[in-house]
Image 1 (tube, protein in one colour):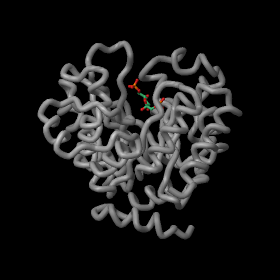
Image 2 (image 1 turned 180 degrees about the horizontal axis):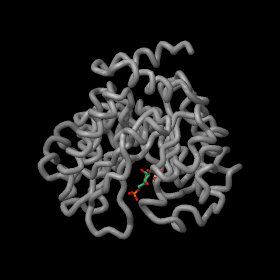
Image 3 (image 1 turned 90 degrees about the vertical axis):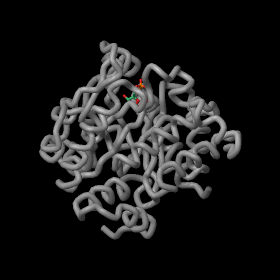
Length: 305
Ligand code: FBP
């Protein structure tokens, strides 16, 4: 496989990584309809863990089957598919080599009161299942954030030594943040920057709003305002990811109308984000509708900015 100039440039940003990790990043970046562009669309399906099975899959019961998600990601021409251990164990052999996979190695669930995650899989599992990366969630601002970062430090070091890539879901939540604060621009940028600093190759955050939440940051944002425009906010997050030297993708959130999602994707693209990681908006729709939506998302990322 010949890498595009864009992918070679992206790989050059990862100055400390071994050939194994670079090859796995290249696999993710070169796969699917966006292969070679530096843009990505990833299918994450860990919502069964986070939200429960019916809330996740009742709208489209075919999605109870882990094989469904591989089929969807492959047919849609996505870059990668991310899932927890059990789901990959139930399907990875059938699709080995068809699409890069990301093993999500920690999880929370809706039965917990604490903002914490359990480590539920290992780097050895990721290698055994043929994954290109591990995925790990941190909750900056939770009372357990430092333990989570320390768990990530150990797993990331092991994954990198084994030639895997590391994808960090950085979702601020905890007692000092209300719902608005969790996606406020300053907090989202802070969360993305923390993910870059803990050594993520690919950073995943939620789309930021225009709110500024942290009192200590308000003066700075007043002096150096970010334009009140979605693309400018995404560009601000890209800056927080080492001025674009780290790949950053944005989650799709709860199922919503196609137009709202596509407008968000246009803004991510215009702001220089590297793509989308869209779960519920994909697998909760009937397959044909999901394929159409994913194709429209891909077309936006293929278009000239
Ligand atoms: P969605 O596109 O469905 O939002 O998926 C992205 C994701 O990060 C999933 O990986 C995860 O299960 C979910 O969001 C968590 O959402 P939250 O914790 O906000 O309920």
